[in-house]
Image 1: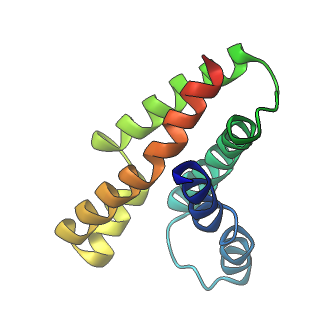
Image 2: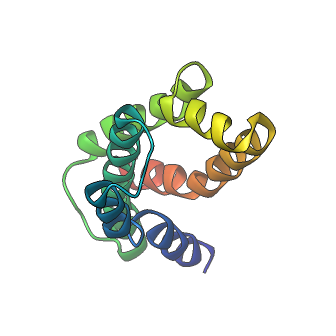
Length: 125
């Protein structure tokens, strides 16, 4: 039950907002710098790809190869550690909401993404 709930929470956080974010970008409502938009979209697309493996884990269905998901997992872990050192999105968020709120939000998002990382790990191995 935990895995299904985690999967649907991540769908709600990654996939559902995507068209609205694209609309904000195209309409000019989002005033963030282009590098922040690129990082945000790349992250959303990459993590959405991980949801395919999460679904495969839940349904015991094979999508792509184990080697592909192992590679995805390595990139996802590196991508999760990189913002500690450099992230335009987090730097922009710190400007907008302050460093403490940004750190709290970043910590919460890391916790929310942990089930995805573990599900892909279990799926790949």
